[in-house]
Length: 242
Image 1 (cartoon, one colour):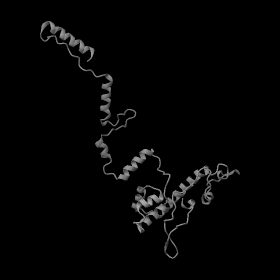
Image 2 (cartoon, one colour):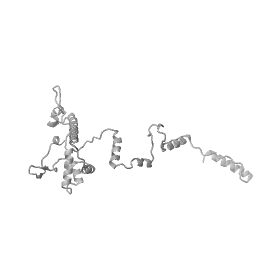
Image 3 (spheres, helix red, strand yellow):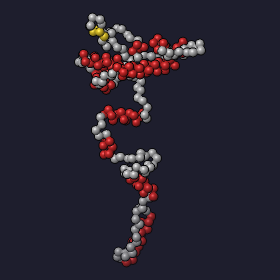
Image 4 (cartoon, helix red, strand yellow):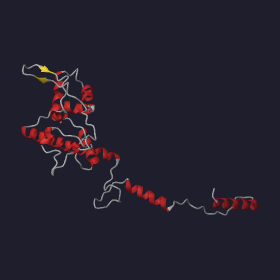
């Protein structure tokens, strides 16, 4: 109880003690007041949850131009496939940059995964393949589900992009003192002009250890007799797989 209410009550009791009846003196009660900041906040909140009808109206800084309700937002994704929603969310997260994961399976490896699962599905299950190739089970499921077959031109472009990716990776490893394989050295990766020594021959060599995440000993190959043979015990260099 504030001081103003205490004063009113004291005055009423004082008048009642003299008259013995209810006081006919009606003192006006002050209406509750809302502070100016509260009123401004309520108005701003009402505007922020209301969809803007005028497209020319500029939104305050930090707010989107059009604010959707929960029902309207759910309607924007209606009829879209889950992969389309994920792709849009990923594009927004990356800010328009291209998706370039650190780990990526080669086209030949993905074809080998499909071949393994088709020939022995009870042995090469999704968890087994995911554990062996060190990728997520969802990535294996997408590889097995895909039925897309590239044309000759698309296959050439695909291999060209893969070679470009390998060139970029080995160029970065050269800066860390790692010697690139002969294939990439012949392509000019790590080449030094002016008579200088490359970094893998200097004191800064082998600044980082390069270990492959998996070996391909379970991927079968077919010999001249037509029999499927495994690469068990044969380690393929990373330079031949990338």
